[in-house]
Image (cartoon, rainbow, N blue to C red; front, side):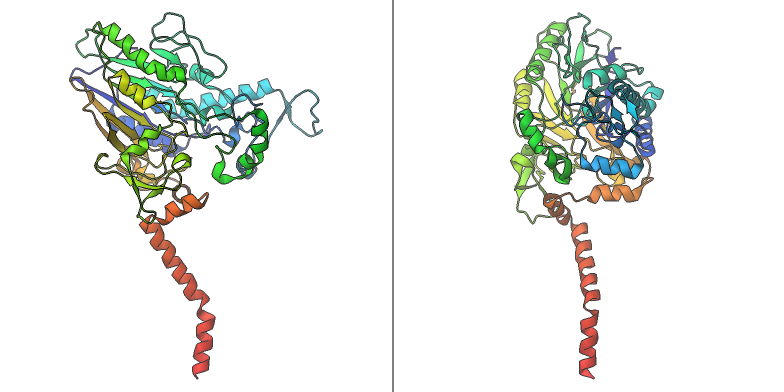
Length: 485
């Protein structure tokens, strides 16, 4: 399928981030996707990771805390509790020398994996429904939760390609030379335009039909979790992982993952390949999409005192410091709702983009409450917030899908804005109580302090504390009144 600028010289892309749902995708999420497509009439939809809520009780039997583990062997306590509340019953796969209770529902691991594949396929069918109905091409990369359902990126790629309009290239690559390969981790050898599942180029041709590549959309697999521990160290850390709600994903790791070294090198290789295809050897204008942001996203923020209203505390490498948006670097309408959840290590991805040339923007998901667009040293760095209603995020009216409009004569001078639930549908969602909880959820001291920096939340807490203090002081006031008589 060939992507091409329209006759009027425009090309529209919708970025959907962090759908992060179970097999029965929330109806509000589906409605938001349908309304955004209807309003934008896009030429391409990009899914930037965490489409799957891999830790959902639906996947409890095949859940992977980390790659390479036995599916379903180590499930976090929160998922176990959620499963009990939902009436989800765990089943036991037959294993050698495993003591199985007489009442257990015995299935094989192959059976469980087949069921999970079917659930993943059903999830895709639900959120891709409006995309397929509209006949819009789409492409997907992966986040840190997708694989946790037990199905890795290479298999998910195969499932995506079952749906009409999928542009994810097969293992033999986008240019059909048959040399692409993938391994059990989902990484692979690839071709000039397609390196591995989640890392590939989507050239957009000029409107005149000449075949010249006027722009490229780059999808980058940003990895999931860093892993420098030995198996024994991970085993020792598991109890903390299972029970600490602040570290549900990171207690057994060295933070979030990064693009592979091969992907970093590919950023330059693919530009050379596109330049050769155009015949001039020059890099083409390109925008990259991935899930986890690199550390450079902090460069468009400004460090402020801890008491600054609406400031957020940084995480991990940036912990102990508070930030707000730098208005001199960020576009109007930008929002910072939480810390930037980048990797502890800077692998030089943004530097590689600058060195390769052509790259004018990098957009991510991952941090569900962020929706800013900043500019630093020649490259825009931006977010789309979650468009899902089954995960944490901002208020219903602020959840949305990011629209881009590119112009053939100057792709870097693109326009972008959020298509939000509040604009497309209404102020409130179908389950506003859950969304309110997800917006105000406190999982530790950091998130509590972030909440108290929100003026409306702080005012509410002060008012409630005052009312409680007044109520508790009633007996004292009665005693004082009696003593005056």
